Image (cartoon, rainbow over all chains, first blue to last red; front, side):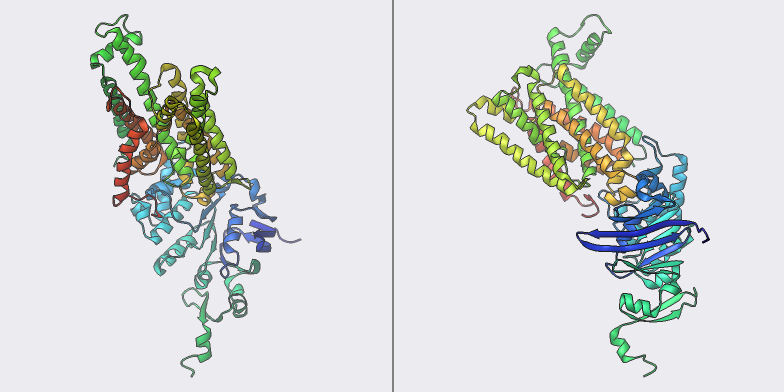
Length: 271
Length: 347
């Protein structure tokens, strides 16, 4: 008999289409617990849609999404928010809050009606702000922060939710290189399962335990970065030529992309 | 700063409210002193057996005319302000006011039908309020139905449907007005539409006051959810808010409150729009601070606006809506031009 591995998410024959355009096509997938999982694929391959289905914001037309033996749509919003925290792409806020107030909102699913912020809430929020390195911004207004600071505040809010799953939709977008690394360092040090859509394949290779490759709504590959990031697969899905090396610091694959123009010219030293 | 000492700030606002009540009783064509107010209050509340200083006429003016009117001003000012604050969370936009869902235009049709066409005359004195209230709820109900698509409430549809229904209902009101030959009736409708608290009596202020308190307490239970709404639909959902249910709750409670208020006071503009703005400058956007501050500042504002409306062209009364717009408008423009005040991060 097959060994029963503990799974976090199970997705069975999942289809999703919007206005007759098929966005996700027959996805079958089992995501393990406790890993850092990266979701990669070209623009329009259905990454965001798959994430939205995972965090039960949109309903699939066919198929089901299971979170630990339960259909996500049978879990109420509130209970779900205690299990899964989300950092969406939207980061604008209609009205201004202070950083601390925003991070406190991560405690919302844990609150009963009329319940005041308790001492333990205060500690959890402070701890989350410390982890995300925004404690020094606690009393600043959110709107006055830079893009990187804003992202870290939203991550702090998600941490304050104290879930064991964290889903992020392209969290490194619009961040400078320093803040990209800082954010991913932070996420990889968390004990929770992280599922993240990300564009930068080298960052994905460096930080993720498992990669999930989507192409035109279909699951192309799922496995370790070494298994997924191959020359053939990248050529097939992204239509780019690549040379795969090894990052001496991480021992993970390092991708050297070559555009069509320079490929024809060949390597400088060899000519 | 204010947030750190928020309870002191609230206490201060409550004191100003009480001072405003006393101040507003003092102002008027009949001279009254604070000791006379005290005398009348003690007598009416049964602490003393007879009036020592005040005359019966003064007692009647204080107890039967000015006090109910001031209490209604408090209910209307507080009610419109918290409704505005809640509606702004609902639509995630600071340009919204409590009438945006069509409440005022629906109420106007009801009121015009009663004043000009004599509808509901069997209800006697209650006809106007009841017809206005029913008109308001019908308008909101239609707007809400129009905004539902596939089981979801679309906010942009809600706003657009509100505008469309307001236009249609205003057209009906205007049609009735144009067709009538009753000049007195037309003036009465104009007065009603511009808002007035002159009709306040102990008998008709109880419902607005009770509904105002109930809706305030109700919304105050949901401050966390109101805050989360401001973060956008998706984020609010991921924070565990049942978006559809909660929106329904907000729409129903706010419509009920504004409907009740419009029914007794007519449509008083600007309060529900500017008070939440002023409050946000003072205490930020967190609804635990916004709701109580809006209620008190709205109440204080309307007490004085109403007092002004009584005395500015005495013995005539200036419609309250004119006062609130004339005070509120320039302030709002100043706010618009002021650097450092943002209407949201998209600004």
